Length: 231
Length: 231
DNA sequence: CGATATTTGTCCGTATGTATG
DNA sequence: ACATACATACGGACAAATATC
Image (tube, rainbow over all chains, first blue to last red; front, side, top):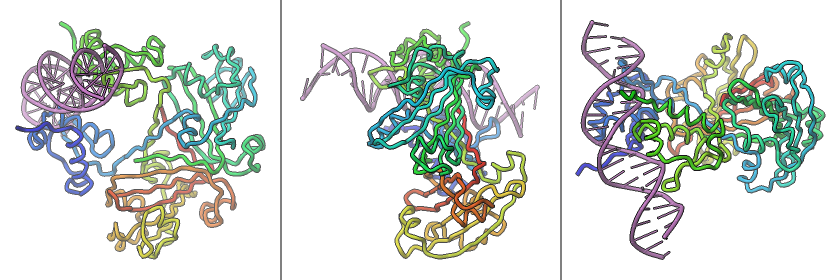
């Protein structure tokens, strides 16, 4: 008789009640057991629906205190971090890659500080360019720790970008991203075909394997670049 | 005797096997039933652990085909969309707000197009400034649809920012964010105390309630601004 | 191409753990 | 200390997708 009820149905119905203000911000909503009865589902199913809403920031849950509609929905947006190649190909454009330079060296203080390395640490410095339909899309300026990733000594990066090689060969546990606007340096301007001082969109990425730093990458885009995300 | 095993334990152990390359990219991992036996847990518990890893992008699952370690872990980062005020106060700085202008009008074509409105649509145009420790932090240039949110006619926004008022009073179901770098316009430069043409970090936000557009906001930050996110 | 077997997806009902008012 | 409400575990069942024969 009673048809099965999906946690999605329950989740969406509760989200609707919140959006339509039938459940007001700050208000206590019914307990799991009551909701389970109302929707004709098991408590575990209701729980799953509630968990998703909590994760989305629409409700706040506390043991014993119950579940409330969030007053200031701390919503979080997600954006994917794809390979540059995939990002470009998904736009229906052709992808090209150029290696600009590759040197083993020690790092400038700023780089060492951000990666938490000491003065003697050896790093590989790789500069490269990613193009979409033959025009510059992203200038990648990357430092790779040779202590953490000795294997990169044997990779010449002439055909495979550091981005792609690392994703393929080097697992990481933590990553940190910083995005900001900056004026193109002389070098960045030259590589990207811009005037020096033109606004550029910069993403910096640090990845680590447990405590050990793997790499610091500075990814510079021309001002036409858009970073888009939903919800 | 057999103690209960948490899905977190199982999840973390499997994540470790992937990070340590005991399970290689592209490889098929054991089925849920086998894992349940190995970890001494119920299949539902293993399933929850696997779901979380799949959501994090470490594995890819398909019915009948089984579960594989992702070749190109499409990891997604999350960033929170807080109120500007909270964002500033969390940095230990004092928050100030200034209303710059507030007009009821029709919108320029670009705005109408992005919000999907017709020519006769009435909008409220609000310009305001958010300051951190008395220096300009964000210039907010916002259009609000009066069809969707007639209540804003009665709000003067002299002490409460549109950002805050909308979050508090107007629920939304969808939001879209776009981030990019741009050169400061004459107006933006004047408001933020910059030279015209200085690189600025721009976030554009569109929110909707189901199909109806609520608002389009252009949020302009000085070049010192950093948007940071983890994992 | 169609039937089938396999694997994940999700639900149920129950039981117990845990944080907290 | 206690009751309450959420958190999560178990085992069983069926549904849905799909690789393979």
